[in-house]
Amino acid sequence: MTRDDQDAAAAARVIAGDPSAFAGIVRRWQYRLVNLAWRFCHQHATAEDMAQEAFLKAYRSLGSFRGESQFSTWLTAVALNTYRSRLHRDRQPWLGREPAEPIDTAPGPQNALEQGQRAELVRRAVLTLPARYRDAILMYYFEDRDIAESARVLGIAEGTLKAQLHRARELLRSRCASLGLRLSDVQTETP
Image (cartoon, rainbow, N blue to C red):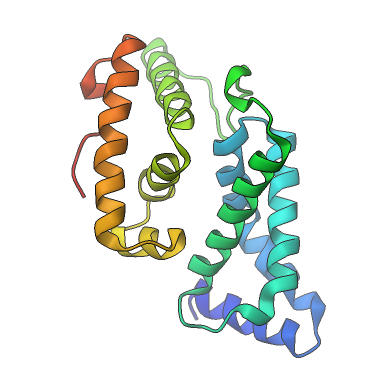
């Protein structure tokens, strides 16, 4: 049974009156939703709070899951919309803050440290993009989803997503160049 099958079965059990079945969904998705939230705010405690809010919204909205898409696509869309709303509602200048340590960091040799610093600069540049470009980059590159699934999560056509990714990469090249990064430090493959 795939994770999506497990999650859809758990969702059906919750809808049928077994709220404890939602614990399995949280257990399977907690790390991923916190990680996605962290990409928006770069603060671990805030990311955990945002993920908790997303799980609460998902729990309350389980009745709207019709199985027309994979459960993972639906849950990620709920989380993404929750994070966008939270940032908009709070209107906090996340980008002006120094980012906290990423969730998965491990000390390494100097070369790994430099690569990590470059990657952090790229992540920060991604966060400065307009929302539609930032979300496209986050879904496709950071969440490692294919074009079709990224487009479904974002609720846009695949062609629109490809255009947004193209424009986002152009903006990133420009912003990374202003940070002193080489273009080779930014992935530029066309989906």
